[in-house]
Image 1 (cartoon, rainbow, N blue to C red):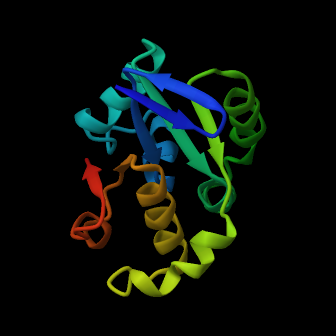
Image 2 (tube, rainbow, N blue to C red):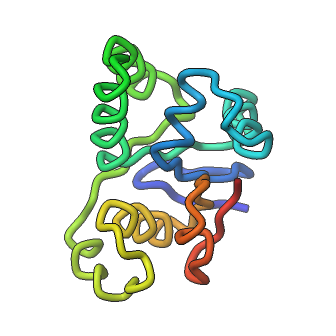
Length: 142
């Protein structure tokens, strides 16, 4: 299967959109990351998947790291995201903002933006959030 991610052609790779907790728990090696979610990172390392991270997730992650006095992990992660080929950073665009009203069941604004971007990219969202997972508009794993 051939898909495009911006100007990059993706062949035979899954595209996973990471939510904040999935990325955080992977970063700190937490057992709270489900085995299915952990496998997403393994797939990416094996060249079988692309991991998408939005600016919203990065901002939330910084807040979470600050809350737990772990901000020293942030800069190395940003460097990894910029240099490791299986990571892609996804911005919010004007169409995402226009689409906010189409997701009323996702009440938290940041979650709604993540869901909208996941839908736009036809990606699979890696999230533990039950409200998001209940949405029929996207495919989620946990």
